[in-house]
Length: 202
Image (tube, rainbow, N blue to C red; front, side, top):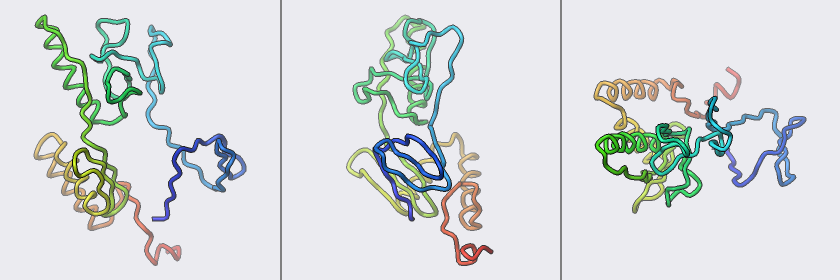
């Protein structure tokens, strides 16, 4: 689709319509869009040592803030190095937060009953991204690792519909997506190649 991806490069500066990379190479660019990901908040009363990269709070294997017995943190705002499969912290994905929330709820019940809590271990169910109309990518665990194109696009739609809470939400979302698909409306923020009319400025 005309998009070139350069991995392993850091942007050092942007000056005079030029992107300057850390290795000294440059990219001419009239427009620069910066996406910095998620950064947590800081809270009064907590020490600077309580925070890691991206202002994420350090937690133990039970999602409990280090040095505290009654503060728990889940999702994008926490980081732990205790999970053997993710020594540098978990990816900042909704699936991580959902699994942490479920594990923490069970642990709080165990603690309340005087039982020992279980450490959180993330079960990676894969990653998906929709790119444009009929195009997506999916990296799934198991024998089927990588999907792309229309099949991945259908898989993305199915997974996201199934993750909604009730039938009403599923049906409403599906009908909205169906309308957007056939009317080519853009609430889904999909990349669509311009047609002949658009290419002539009409």
